[in-house]
Length: 490
Image 1 (cartoon, one colour):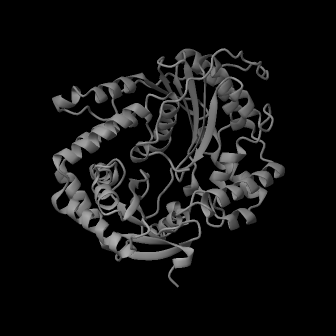
Image 2 (cartoon, rainbow, N blue to C red):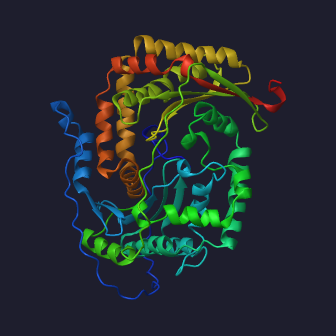
Image 3 (cartoon, one colour):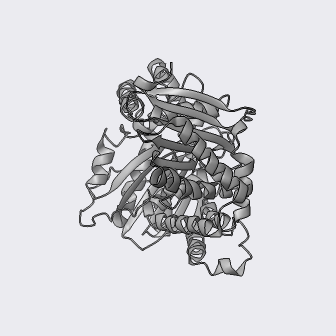
């Protein structure tokens, strides 16, 4: 799965359900007592970026809430390199435990794709004290929930539990970090599971192959993001256990991981438990920071077509390389995506869906990658629409936005919606834990998450105009048209 971005948060985040508290905890497997590790002080909380100087921003309730969140974040590092992020919040009687590993599909070698996603499944196949499938049983028996996700840039695992079950969540994550069962049997079993997932969620999913082709086309020559996270089925067929073992040993280590705890818990007790369960995990030889290659220059538009037997009407994808994530230009282009496609009042929705009935849906997003990022767009047509005509209509709206910029009302509407959804999403212990872990792992400091809203509030209509006119140009665009199989061009 892709990592969540501020754009993808819109319409997808919701408060996590409160877990039941009346189920008693079953006894955990006993581990021998160990000497306490050398105390590591919590890193003092300091602002990552100087606060904005505008007096109006200091009065914004959303920014005030983020200042409070930033003040509540604590960070420490164990002697084995495990980074820990703590965020105490007693609003809900639950606690979320998230483990984020600094490995995604970008770390895979050519011919060995899909390993990061494979381990999203392998990590639930048991460890020294946990039988296969028991991780699910132990969490669900206490009214909790759990899952794992993989993106190009990281892999994470999380569980949400009643507050009094913090020890269980930590023990489960520590046991599979230290003693995961990477056996031939588990490997063969999960290889088949991933291949079945590919058939269900990719090969048989409407328009999905078109999006995979778009990223191949837009990122061609840029391996970290050129191949899909789910991987090549041919590569999985050819994979050998020793390759999988080497991948696991290299990346699934405490010094390549971030443990995040968010919710209703005692920080001192949590630190003691973390040192007890994770302190003996063995660090691997230090990994050098990932080095992104240079993005090959694109001088002309790229186009391709894909046949899809799962669809009844055509659709198409656009993609453009854009400015680095967290830059002023990136904030502006993200807001351009909202002005163009977010909600019934957006320009393309009003024009193509409500007005001309040429499209069933329109959407646009960015990936928020630490490497080369992309602005992407998808349009699904109605039966009466023609690809050429709809593309011209989309191009006209993009050109207009780049010529005159959004109106103040359009930009305010986009910012207000983003502000509301961003703050609302962070109320959930689970989403807050996973996002903080992601920021600590990818960007080096979990507290940077609390500074993102300020970047959007600084965007002006003129900044959106400049970003669209300079970045969303035809010579830097990749286009993939998706046709029903019976209508596909020869």
